[in-house]
Length: 255
Image (cartoon, rainbow, N blue to C red; front, side, top):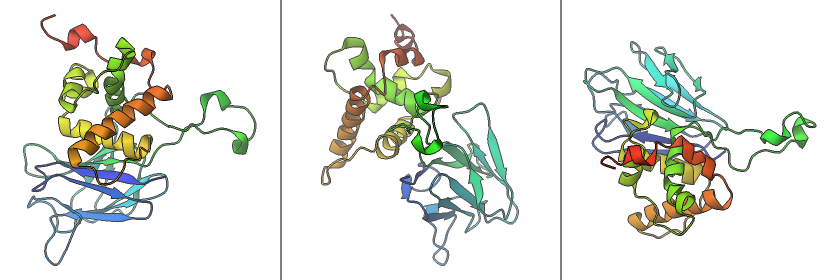
């Protein structure tokens, strides 16, 4: 397992922050101060100086609530409203969701939150179920959840090739947002969220290795192209997956 990604969006702090934590690593969050440094700084007076801690393990992550008074919610944005409540002073609560939104109480009109992309959930090869011992069964090389938003992003990126069967430009982040706009799970999908899903696909799910030294824009474009190339080459995204997207004519008003 290669660890977790933690993303604090712009607005919850001065700037957006993305952290990668390997197994065994921890990150503290809160309002912070010179005497209480934190990796994720939440700029809200209702948040404790040291509000909590995230701990990455081999196959999941844990949340510690260091507040004396406030409970925190961990929501599953990919599910049907599932959430966990982590009470005050709870240490090491295991979080089972592959993609989570941690929500802290505040006086803001919009929730104070950050996202966590969990360690890769591993699935058995469907064709190997019930055959032989556990040790003899085959794991899937690329373990993706086809009901997750990150998979919709991947399908949208691959769509031009699957429909035209010829080389085409990789859709840009704004184009992906627009393409998925009418999907029920993506009504509030933002460009920054698409970028986070792309990072998760490239770094955690498909384990894309890009050369060092490229400028930021080149790395982003190269990452999109590499993700699409691998997904198509190994049949991770296929023509039947296009049914997961909104109808093309519905996504293009005026046609």
